[in-house]
Image 1 (cartoon, one colour):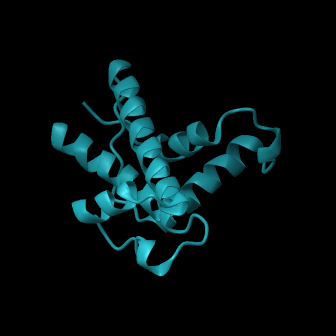
Image 2: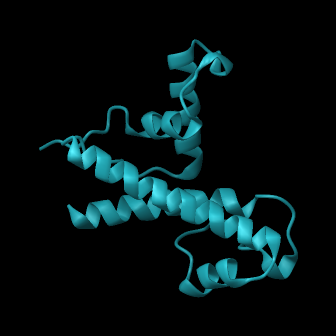
Length: 132
């Protein structure tokens, strides 16, 4: 169970890194390359230790996503509803999230008052509660 949770958290972290890698223009030396798999400790350290607004923003986005993932996972476990995601690549996850939003809002996301982070989580979690 712990290995599954770590794997899921790494997937969330990877998605955040992907988002961070395209967040605003950055200098070539400061850019974390497009996501192709788990990144190194060195890449994380570089992203978070630079005194550069673009790199710092990427670091904050990554950390916020990681903290959010940890909090949601704990909340779902406390409710005895842990999520077991199938293997998804970022594009599949993106399409799944958009489909969930379209279905739950009648294709009118502007009328939904839920937070985007909650809707993204629900879009991935729906139908993926772990079987006991």
